[in-house]
Length: 109
Length: 120
Image 1 (cartoon, rainbow over the protein chains, first blue to last red):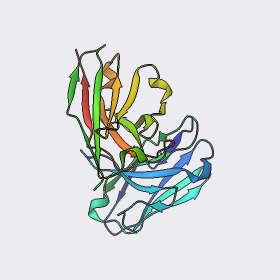
Image 2 (cartoon, rainbow over the protein chains, first blue to last red):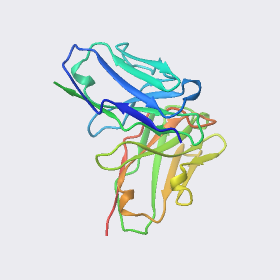
Image 3 (cartoon, each protein chain N blue to C red):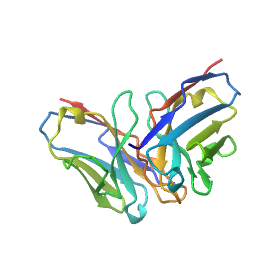
Image 4 (spheres, chains in turn red, orange):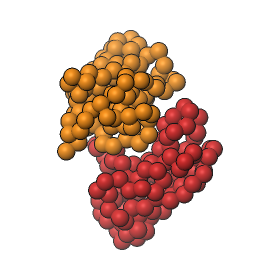
């Protein structure tokens, strides 16, 4: 099973700053089959990125994904107040499929 | 718009079973799959399994094999997840999410979640 490790556990930034979130896999993720989700308190997760770098429908272009192999990054170019949430990465396509990282909490500094 | 609406909260005793429903609308149900993901209180996300609404194929997480069954009713565009022999550590919010038709990939969108509480 592929284990995903996200860092940092908590990231404290101010609105307008740039956020860089990391997701590292214990083995190579095939075909860049990696997704990112945002979850706010009391809400279901929302898909942001799939295929490591493709934005989901309706996601603002300040969100971008990059990486391949074992190292992936979610970047939020300029933080808006509504971006403070927990972010999860997920890998798919392996066997057994579908594991999530433990999450990164993005909080207001 | 694409929407998944789940059934309401449940309280169950240890050893009992629970069946959660997920009604889809706004898209062709049989052109996609459904995955189920759970989240224990204050914890992260755990994928439980996937079912293709096209052909009924399933893929369950190994740790739940033998306790979970996922089904679909294409006449009502509804997916179901049944979990048996409930334990206290099954207490969680259970989410359904639209997935790929032939295998599990990414999840979009998600249902609103169903809280299942297991307590004596």
